Length: 235
Image 1: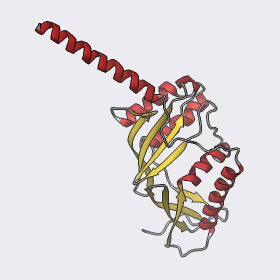
Image 2 (image 1 turned 180 degrees about the horizontal axis):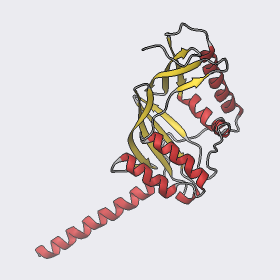
Image 3 (image 1 turned 135 degrees about the vertical axis):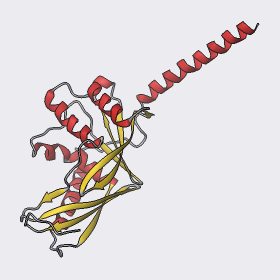
Image 4 (image 1 turned 45 degrees about the vertical axis):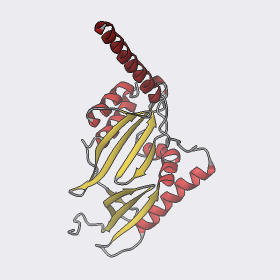
């Protein structure tokens, strides 16, 4: 009697495991509820991307006191419009290209966190991979601390950096050029590589990003405009 009860209990337990695995597998095929990349062909998306770009450039080119910080906010919708409509051209101008088999990236701004998601391509069944990162400034450089990784709507357990690199190797582009671009992105997202956030303006001045603050639906960029000399002011 007891043996039959134990066998029945084991069968139920095994059934629950199988059902759980099947449900989790199906959830990996479901896009995160917020993943809806804008259509880059829409005029509204193009105008939003161009408008954000022009606004940031106008702010950067203003004449300011040497040690004055200034802050500009970017809305989530603006950032995603830029990723959809302008990322390809931006990469091309730097001798890079976005891999053809990957879908458009999309970001979600949360309190102190930024989620980056993209369709990993047809060889994954169109599954969306998400990396959640925490931006921080370390000794004047921008670094991302990886907080979590997901496939579809399922969080991936384990060390986030190891899992993201594993997913990149498993689902990354087949061509070496595309994989090189993905590897560079992975190095930044996993914190293995920090970014020197200095941008040169057309007149020779430079802009240094000094802080990046993410909140619900927007990100604040605090910068300082530098002179043309190589030496930067203290602070």
